[in-house]
Image (tube, rainbow over all chains, first blue to last red; front, top):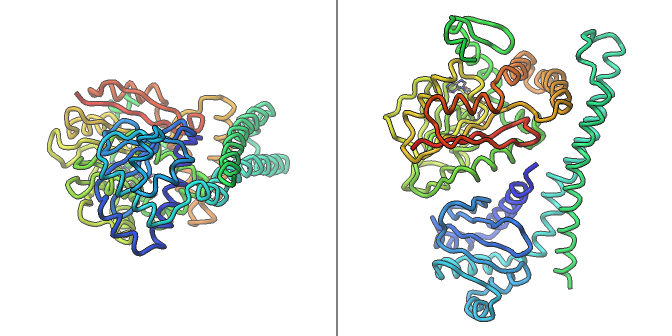
Length: 203
Length: 252
Ligand SMILES: C[S@@+](CC[C@H](N)C(=O)[O-])C[C@H]1O[C@@H](n2cnc3c(N)ncnc32)[C@H](O)[C@@H]1O
């Protein structure tokens, strides 16, 4: 399962939920209308691209030009939310910025308005969305696959279904389970990584 | 599938039917599921179709001002996103052969406040009613397998695409691992029609779905078909073990 898209989906859902809760944010968002911004976090292998309209779309696109590109670590993301801090962060080499400064400042202002604590936020929504969509989903698939096979096995035994080729070979089930286990391990690693981030945020 | 063009018969799932009647049989399938289509999508793919679609958008290279055709767009998942990404100066056309699907799509997008840069066109992928060299991007998600003459449809897409533009085909494909393939067969032939029966009271449509997935060309065949009509730099990316594949090709 493509993890980057899962994360982008979760972030997008979260950001727009917060936007919807804050009526003042619409004015700030309007300043960014039509702009694109890319943020590369040191902690993440893929950059996030934010596209602003009446809402925020989060893409994993790395190809298209953006108005402004930033690179920084997650721990400095909160500081960046004050537009006044941006120059200082750049001077301290904590933030590298390419492109339109104004877009960066408007984005910072929007984040400030929304009062988003990113690290706290990511952990909060991962509790909700990612856990829901990935960890639990993947665990469920395994369970469901198992019970489907059990049920099917029963049906076949009961003679309701006679076609021979429909009986899954034990090896097929074994293989499928291994696939699912791999997925589960991937997800667990991802979860551990997020827990780490969460711990760091609490410190 | 190429040899089908020589006869008057084509596949409707596993059944062989007259070419003329396939279009109306496909229409029947989608009329009967249109209203609950989104719910079924979520149920049957356990939500994963959203991730597949996200991946498609991330590969689209779409940007402000682009003109996008979401072909066989159905209930408009991709079109909604594209509408925001191309902005006011861009244009999105949601095209589908089936007016029930188109209507569900239009209502859904309107409810989301998406108006202005989206147009709705009832059209058959095989003979697209658009000028040559018209679109920057064409997407067809889970639509190509329903089209009777796929070569003709691909050629039609090639014609209306601008030089430099790209086509993205998201479609069920052939799982990479034989075992996964078998497990998936079980799922689609037994679970799928049963859920179809429970939720929309229509097992047959979902039986058709399962069969049409099996009859669809595999990754390399589809790549070849795209190249045959003129697409260049054609590549594909397997998703979820090849249950679904995203093909991408350019017109230069
Ligand atoms: C499975 S739906 C996919 C809808 C949407 N793209 C999605 O991914 O959710 C397939 C759609 O293809 C449409 N379709 C079937 N044959 C077609 C054709 N020849 N030309 C255009 N659309 C067609 C159907 O009406 C249906 O809406």
